[in-house]
Length: 187
Figure: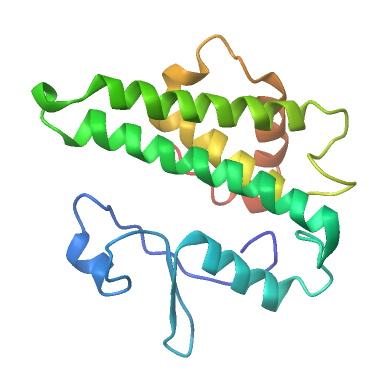
């Protein structure tokens, strides 16, 4: 939203500790949710992003309006979102279950899916340009940085020995931009 120049307020809630409060916005108890000024609440990242781009990116700067370039950006963003979903599954399995109930085979599977997604994003980030697709930052870049930073915080062992230098460089470059720096979550 900062990248699009939109004003907003945030409410930080924990999916583990603030479930009743989250369900006031999303009956599934998931985050994120976006409460609009008129009272409508959007749930799920894809619905929120679709709305934000509809109202604040009429020129298709972050997501081309049609054609192969649009599908390429959407595909890359979906790979990033998939990596985020698998990271959450890994964290929940390892951190929310009793230690004697953790199924390591599941952790290995979802971590492997995350690694595969990261390898795909790394290849795109290393493809030669400053941005993953085209001459400017797109939804693909934003999503890749958000996912990379979240993985760095929640499953840092997947980034041991810096296996994704192009993603790390993209993250560092974007996190110096005001829209990223002002919203970066540490810890």
